[in-house]
Length: 269
Image (cartoon, rainbow, N blue to C red; front, side, top):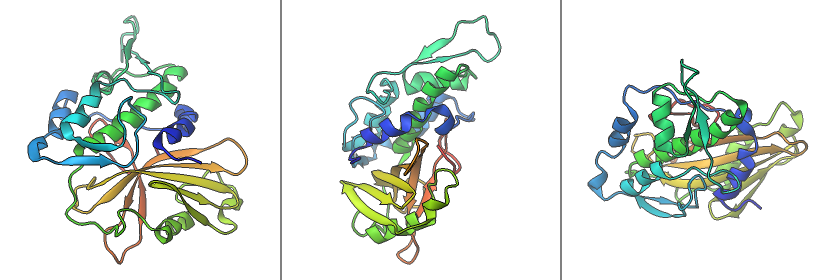
């Protein structure tokens, strides 16, 4: 049973850079300016409460954090699926005679990407996927705002709402027609953890935090999702928002892309 975000990362990290795609776009602000922008209003007393441990950085367990406390993790080493610190070698954008620089934190990674440095080897591209995911999620958490309205009556989605998402097959591995066959089984697999099973596919979804992540004043749930086929080793991993904008509207799952400014357009991570 997958019962923590830590286990999610183990499953997703094994996919490598090809299956766990992402991007870091160029912002109009430098990395330090972006960080200051993220902390604007940080003295408002707002704390973001994580429902489960986030295993991108050592020492970020479930609990409530101020923006300053979250921002401190920009300088924390990124860890891999074995809970070991991971480093990625970044190559100069034009002068290959310059030795690659190693980065271990989101601050270092953001600054190098801002200067155009990139991961050139397949090994470093796989390692870069950890930074894309970890730093993007951290940026979302830092920029979250308190919601003035929520339509999650029980603090999270209901089984019926999760079933409606599962029926849409938003997370799909390959083109196996078996995915759409058979009954959909929705189970609460742990605290803020869901398991959706069909004949051809199993999807795990774990809630991270509830807040206003898109600036509309309404609460969304930031979550991880991992889909695996009943047969085979392929998988699809995504960071998503669960959105419910009205009591009369269905639950919507929106995959997230990340840039240096944080939340970007919808897409697969």
